[in-house]
Each structure stands twice: as C-alpha cells, then as structure tokens.
Amino acid sequence: MKTLGVYTKDFSLYHDVIKVLKKRKLAYVLLSSPVRIPKRIGVILTSKKESLEVRSRKTVAIEACDSIDHAVDLALQKLTGKEMYSKVFIGIDPGERPGIAIVGDEILLQKIQVDSPEKVVYSVKRLLKLYPSKEAYIRIGHGSIIMRNRIINSLIPLKIPIEIVDETSTTPSQQMGRYQRDREAAASIALLSGGKVQTNLPLEPTRGAIKNVQKQSRQLTEGKYTISEKKALQVLRGKVSLMEAIENERSKGKPKCL
Image (cartoon, rainbow, N blue to C red; front, side, top):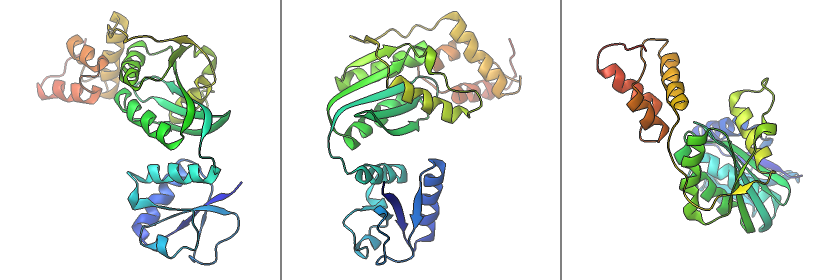
C-alpha cells in the first residue's frame, strides 16, 4: 500500500502535522524535495503555497481544510483511491468522550474519539462526506444510556438507519489506554447488528446515574466538592459539562461533600 508523504519548510506547520500523525500512529515519510518523490508515496500533505511546487496530482493543502485532522482524513481517503463505497457502517461507543469508527466495504477506515456526546453528530457528518457510499448505517452500543440517548437524538435528523447493539462482547483489553479502548470498542460495534431506533429516546437519568456523576465530581476535586443532584441532572442531560458544574460549586465558596 502507498504511504503518506509530508513536505513543508514551514516549521510550525511541520510540527503540528507530525504531532497529529504520531498521535494517530500513521506511517509517513518526510520529504526533503518537492521533485524527487519516492514511488511509494501516494499522497503528500503540504502547505497551500508549497503544493504548487510538488510534481504530483495527489496533494492535500493543509490550510484548505478545517483542521489538520481533517487534512489527514482527506489524505487517507485519497490514499485508498476509492471514490464510492457500497456500504459504510459507523460504530459509536457512547460515553462522556465517545469513540467513533467507520467501516466501509468490510475495511476499517478510521477510528477517532470526540470530547462530548454533542460532538458526535458533526464527526458523523464529516465521515459520511469523506467516505461517500450507496448505503450508510449507524450502530451504537447499548451502554451509558443517557449519553447514548443524547447521541441518538442528535443523529435522528440525519435520516440514516440507527441500531442499538449489545456491546457486551466488544470491551477491549484493560491493558489498553482508555482512549484506545473506546475507539476499538467503536470499531467492534460497527460490525454488529441490533435493534432499530424509530424515534427520539427519553433523557430520564436514574438515581444511580445521578449519584455516579456526583461521585465523579468528588474524584476530580480530590474529595473537596460534590455537585448537587440538580447540577448532576443537568450534566447528564448535556446542559452543562461536569467541569462547569464543579466550577459553579467552587464559586459558592464552600466545599460540599455528601
């Protein structure tokens, strides 16, 4: 398979690109010349200005993309040489920082993680645009019920079939870091079938879920603060982040432990 190439004399841009490629554990080759390009290089990441120097049709101008991650995604898509997939399945591991994976025609195309349930819909839209297909399906794990339902409700307007799957067998090894586990779980979820979702789902947290968020607030503040049940409920419903709720508690001036 062809490899990504990186060519730029802009040190700041170079540093940012390499950081993303290393974080995503992607193979790449640093190019010292825009002319002498090895045959194994399939797509070149470069600046908009320097792309004019590169004697290759397959380049991605980084500044022309929304972000470096977006530029890398586009480069990887060009690397496959495939313009249309028959079927793509997007797997989602729900949680505070959901994992997302996309499988196209039985090939794992990408695994990512986003910062909150509300950001899932934007990533899904981007992936569907990046990997166009004749048929698309979304599959989400059955755990983290409130987070899961928040994600599903945000995805329903896309009018893409959504399935809730049993993710019991998808839990990766605990030896992996949390970031990697969530992405691996999402990739496994994408390959499972489940029950179809027809309409918006309720956002009614259980007593246990509320207590769990309060417990997390204590852990994050080393036992100094516990957010109220009302604030925990707002966190579960996506009204405020957990850190915002903790800062609100801090602003009251008194530690509160339940």
